[in-house]
Length: 499
Image (cartoon, rainbow, N blue to C red; front, side, top):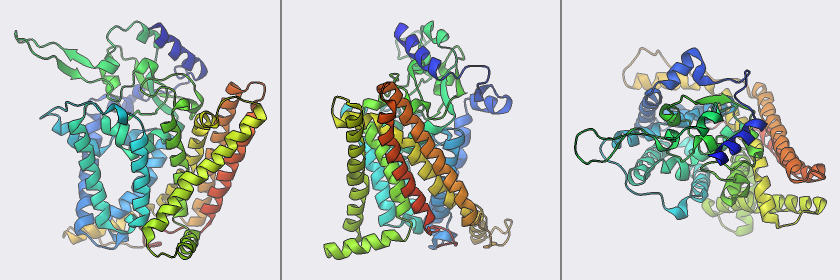
């Protein structure tokens, strides 16, 4: 426990969250009382589950025209926009309210999984592959324009979550499989909130460790029997006294309910601070040395640029050029080459050159791969800024379009109480949204510089500016690329503003 206390104290000393100016959501009068309620998660999951069912039904049986269908509109315009905005201002509360886990919770009342997740898959590589697969399928099949395919994707996601967690113990789907979860984990690194202990001294004297083990009661029936779990601890193996940041944390608050000392809160902190922290952390280890975590950060960032590139007109010029050079018209291999170029070749060249320059300027020893792995986390804030700008654009320009679509869906069912559809509803003008996009990008770049500067000061105290400069140049190049992309006319996918 001395190691636990020293580890948390080192983190707390650098990023204090328990001072008088700190905010703890669990101590706020109304919100805190709701979050402490043991059924709070189900209370949010249930309506989202019902909404998911509506999206599936409307996607399968509603209008084929995407802008008139709730499945495509709410999934690709409103859900994604709200997701990144909530991550920015609050943290991973979308995982807290995740409807995909509700069937799992109901199924576990009937049976319990018996297997542990395979050790060879206890990393982020599978989730990275699935994340890329979703981006690829989105472009290849035009999911934003196909209500039926969107509905099938939603059904597939529910089935996958149920199948994985029906076979494997703990929260295996969330930690090792779910690509949306990985997106949320990285995005919530820029959140001002974190689930964490209030007083490390209390943890040092705790003998039960209920936050990780759960609350277990012995049977009182006079017969030999298995103990009964009254309240589970963290299923993602995040031991609170050693937990740092939001990586792998779904904000489920099981640890809050399990802690017998009421010593865990949803605490304020400096956004992004976990990205430059070397403190070993429970369930994650040291992300700066993990190649899978570095690859996830790279795909998260370059995937943001790729996803935005797929919605501007220059992408069609590039695809046409590739078609002529390769002498083929099949879209899948051409799109595959584009993905390889942007998600593999470009990062290897840019990050490799940046790491090599850093090594030359600082005289650092060691290989390029460990250096690139360590500084890959500096890309996360910039990648999140791109996702914010892109998804925010679609959300703000189409925020009101859900009203006529809902009116139309109700009218199809013979419900006139929502009124006649008013297809004039839209959102903010693109010209008004552009400054918001730029502010998100600037936020991402400045945050990326901050993380890189902190790491450089830690690694090269006497040559910190020489270590920082190459990464600042890389961030500036990616920032300029994002500004150029978002300055292009962007398809208003899924709405009548652009079909």
